Image (cartoon, rainbow, N blue to C red):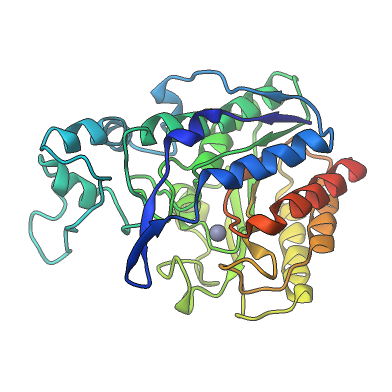
Length: 344
Ligand SMILES: [Zn+2]
């Protein structure tokens, strides 16, 4: 297995409001460094840098105008004299007749292209975000050109909450969706399995009307849990995509056995779809002590998950999503990749 990693992720770090105070976001650089150290320590194969890709390679997952906005947002923001991180402060509400029109002013654009205030932009955000997406693309390319049967895109920022035309939930470009789109150049049918604690509503939106990409997600019940707006069982796809979107929510506080029951359901769906390649959106935030967790997956459980994915024997791009319990990230990453490698 090859790991694709760019130190450019250090160029992006956000802050967030917590208990009335501004603190560093727990989506921070230490997350990626902790997993990288484990990949190196466990001898899981070479670590390579992503190659550069043209912005056009993000098309299929994102609109050109959204990518253009992301790339230029910081310059537009600082041109107004502000140097703090850029966050949306206004959102176009549906009741307004002009709400579908792209605003010209950066403050309007920030709201237009955001689902929430969870994706701040600072000076290095675009470089970090594009390096993260390029890591996923490099992983997909390695599979397609025969350079590897499995690749780990150590992405930061994460991506699965980024939609066709919006950022949110720490996500800007949808790394898993971009990888799946790239794999379709060489593979006929691609499945995305998302085992992050949160539903990847961005992935769902991007492929909702399509039958060439199956999206299966195991996540916490979104009724009162992020991303709230999607992740329900009745969301099964639309038009040609009907039946190609499978949501497997778990009740909050579920035991580890519930996760593995959902995983069995997910693996059955994959077997029916018969993909030629797999993208795993891997979140470590299902760990029992993660601050975001609503399910009690253990370190041993990560090994079992890795084994189940490895045993599929598919060309696989593993894309890193969430995971915020720094103290356990190394052990959980070691367990997952150990299980994965042993089953190949
Ligand atoms: Zn998550």
